[in-house]
Image (tube, rainbow, N blue to C red; front, side, top):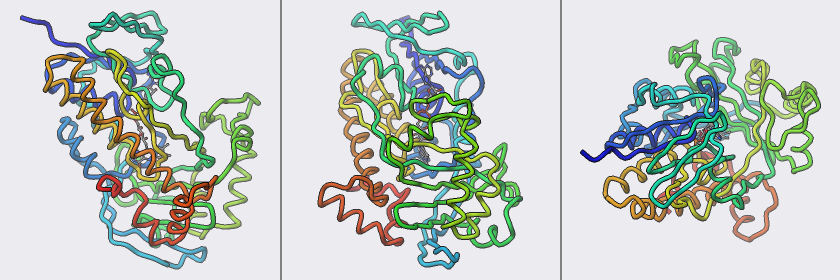
Length: 404
Ligand SMILES: Cc1cc2nc3c(=O)[nH]c(=O)nc-3n(C[C@H](O)[C@H](O)[C@H](O)COP(=O)(O)OP(=O)(O)OC[C@H]3O[C@@H](n4cnc5c(N)ncnc54)[C@H](O)[C@@H]3O)c2cc1C
């Protein structure tokens, strides 16, 4: 009996788990190694879903049970809270935690290893040997880098590829439905809501509560506020409460109180009362700087990159997890159809690298709404188009770019 082929997967989040699920279905042995020593949690981050994600969840075996909340309408509101635009666009809004739980259940716990940090990989033409910082060494036919936008795997095989700061960041959080005022629950809670002052975006939608509680009264509202800030401002924001300078972002518990106080004061000057109510009920808002990039190559010998490690778009389409699922599905399909692993990897790269790049470019297009560093005629045209709230409702978190 020939031995099963084996993949070592780095990163135990969305793309790592998707790859593990899809490869198991074609008979591979898989082991996932996650840096975090404790189970991953998503701090209440909301995730918009698309048919591509639902298909990947079904095909991978994770399923879509109790996935999230179906929202039927999108509305745009003005500062007074008046509805200035409306669209019917049914969509399931879920949470990072729910997706992680569904995907995590597809893998035997004995093959999911917390507390393992990828250090380096050596290749010999027919396989690879992975070294972990904690000392463990693993041999595999294929190493999959699913370790996110700051991928350590990519840093070794393509160190020149670096994420680019978009010139804006978001404040976010997810207040509990039960804490919100009755007017907020009635006016914005049931909807996917846009409030669009100049060069800013405030977006909200309902998501599951703790432990995936979907019952009315137990849910949360995902709050996102896009704000422009140049690299200098970001560097200042990345000085934490203890005065330590971080390179890219600050772990939420360490964000300085003066930044949060200033953000709350700024919000009071511009936001409708329903969004202010949301913000008041977020005990610990945190910020996420927006970066993007697309690697020109995503296969390096027996190392393949997937998900955010391969390409990461600005979050305007809410398509990152769908892309992670699509990458995993394509990788498994190529390995199923080709006996020769290297030929399969070439096919995977040819199929998915252009898609990652297209998604990233589309994210930049939608990002023009914020008016940062517009250069070309096309960027100015797109900026002008997106000043209409109706256009934003038609384009944000809608995968229409796939048909282009
Ligand atoms: C503000 C925001 C909103 C978003 N909204 C949406 C949305 O609505 N819909 C959507 O589909 N997507 C959304 N996304 C994108 C989505 O979150 C990502 O695309 C997705 O999480 C990518 O999954 P991943 O597994 O590739 O990477 P990650 O989720 O980043 O996971 C990488 C994993 O690798 C681990 N790791 C890192 N380094 C190592 C190492 N050296 N060794 C071992 N493990 C390591 C990390 O701990 C982590 O668990 C959003 C992103 C942002 C920033």
